Image (cartoon, rainbow over all chains, first blue to last red; front, top):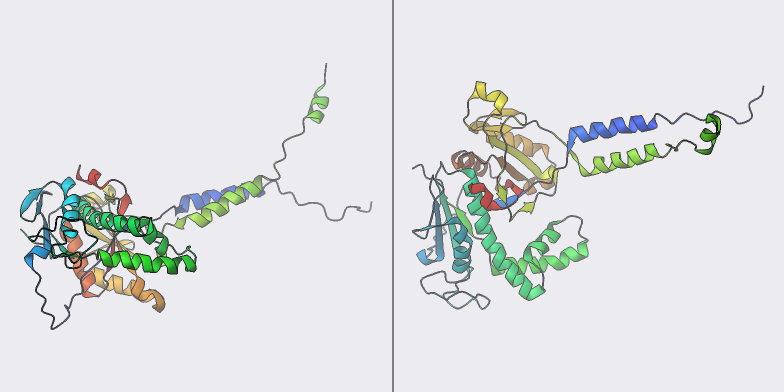
Length: 202
Length: 159
């Protein structure tokens, strides 16, 4: 008997099984991973030569963590929860009056301006990493709070949002170019100067 | 009384012809949003929480270093002192710099100065190990580090 319909249809019933098999394989071997964390720049090993900078003591905000996770901030014992507020107050103190956007107390015994203000973090070798990260987080948070405030005032958006959008590779380049200037400007208003001293052994 | 044949004719079986399409759709979804696990953890790795985080966007620009106590299966052999895991093996502090340099050499030249070292350190580890690693990284002039954390309230760490 001659065939009328040409080649018979291939049975696609098992296609679903094959696809399920692949699906389950990919589910098992992969993870949804978007890592996030605190970005830090380490100081270079060889310090630049013939630079003899004198930093006034009042421009340094010292944070010391001991092995029990207690904080010594500017030679006073402080609770972790108050650290951010203290860091903010130090950064925007504006002692020499050159910083017109600072809302600090203009205390002559504290930092001159955000440009000069340095936060120095020192920790013990036996400090718990979790505590260390919390302190780092609070100090970065202090900078972000101030930058957000200025970004809201100038551009009506949070600095952290603007920066995230600027760093996102999916943002169109026209938007990125626009954001670049804004992000730079805010970063220059409160430059992040966080120094990590070498850890002490006792 | 209806007979069986009639009932069957009136209610045809649900067509499963589009089932493969649906499953393929799911498959492609998972293929695009996930990444392949490339190393099995030999150390405990419960990261601390932080909320001022930045995302690590491009995975090809990252070198990972894990630190933590050996995982429960290995603890009986290796003890409970924190260990450094590079790639798929445990290593000592002296091996960090050569490893990082060899990883760096594998990256295309154009992105070498954009490479970030992601430090995935367990909460329970003491900072001493971490500062040793940082010292090693400074020695080979890889200065961009990222303390990788979970996103969450940082004060939960203290408890």
